[in-house]
Image 1 (cartoon, rainbow, N blue to C red):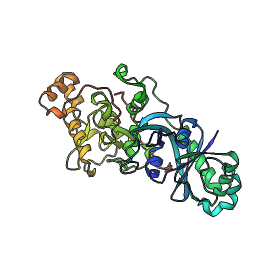
Image 2: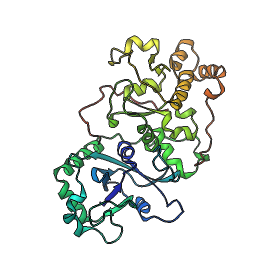
Image 3: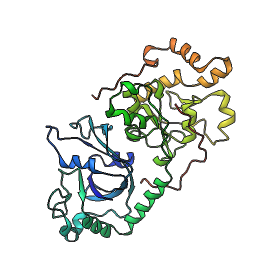
Length: 363
């Protein structure tokens, strides 16, 4: 196991909430950057000290090795960064004791490496650093200064990781033959609601629109425009996703519910009287405003997904034939498009849980 120090001043909220680290592969001028190259050395189980606003605010544990992935939706941050970089999945837990290294400089100074140090001798951070390796002696000193809060956070991450669902290795990508290897893994993960797609959704959504659950580990990143109908770009687009409790995700994915343009929950009549009360769903809930981009995807969902399963049962037609009829009368932009090759252009509230977890149907 190795220890790492990540400077996240611009991207702390996005990376910690989204459970990842991301960096460009090289400097803007094309030069090699050791602090970006370090991303390639991270292994599952490595510990990460998250530094932001002069404090170590969280620790993380890497859940996988480095992958090539598109830049997440950081907004204004990193506008000059390349659109492709290194992506490492990390589970974080916010520390209850967020120390300021400058206050402990005399303790930490003897253990700072002479080259590629994460800190100045004064204990101040270094702007040029993104990811720096932390020698064992420095890691021990940092853990000693943080105290019991470190071990509490580490134990919490271990509990969360042990409860994680195993990946579905049966997932495949229909257009695998036309995809380059760069984004293949991210597209596989996006189909499962993971990876860059989940991180992009977490940058836009705070909680489940229906249940109000706001602990990311209890929520699914659900595609609005289904995976099967989306282009590769849309499959990774955070605007094409919502954070939903597992039972709400099931209803949304199968077309039993959708969301109206006036912030309402729309429920198929056949399940309205049977599931809302049984699952404790408030049919009159205000689901909040959606962005312009989300509304475009939701219009597609309302036209092409909502009520399809029920329509197929009622008419004796297959869902595909019902979909075809509705698509024929839908505006051009709302019709499913064939997939095209993609051109690269802790929190730790474990007391909240979801009672109902219907088995997720493969998309």
